[in-house]
Length: 53
Image (cartoon, rainbow, N blue to C red):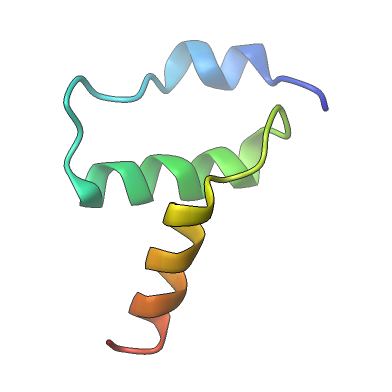
């Protein structure tokens, strides 16, 4: 897995992030970096929201 150091430097996870901030950060991270997989909890929450639950 390769880290996109430039993206990480410009896109820090906020301190004490809300669920919305975490979802947004992890979604963007998945688009721009392949250093690790998105946490299962985030994938489930995104899928749940896509279904309109």
